[in-house]
Image (tube, rainbow, N blue to C red):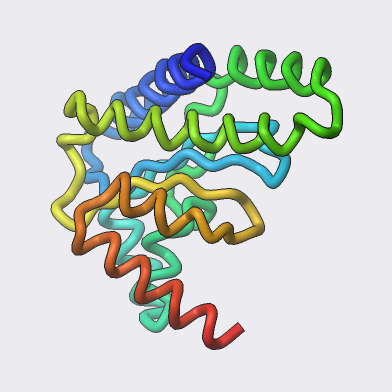
Amino acid sequence: MKEVQEAIKRAAEAAFQSVRLAHPEDRFCGYALYSDADGSTVCPSVNTVAHFERIVQSGPADSEYYRWSPAEWRYEFEGAEHFSTVFASLAELAKNTDDTFRPKLKNMVYEACVGALEQMKAEGFFNDLDQSGVLVFAVSDTFLEREGHWMDRLNSVDSAMQFHRWHEITQRHS
């Protein structure tokens, strides 16, 4: 697991840094990694303050959705080429995994993504985040109960509470 987390961390640093270098005029309010329901991919996403404000103006009632949903972010998937080694490693692991181990492999990938973001945060990589900025790990097209725990680990208490309130409201209405 440590090797997978380190590979994801290196790829994320390269992806996020490439976005920063390509868009030096932007102020950033979100960095994310996301995976799929099988844990077979890892992708980056970065949001900007200007993009977030623009999409919230078009749908103010959905502001928390836009804050926590990397697929809606300005630079979704930009820098993904830095994950090619990670993709190859995950494909090799999946190929050599039987059906009983697949759920463990998926959970290992998820935990490695959260761990990589946590480590980057501890090292000061995200010091450029806007004061209301968030770090996110998400699984595409699904919500897992663990997502709240991940938000607690990655964000300030205030930001994590916003996530929990939003999630509670969306669960009541679904």
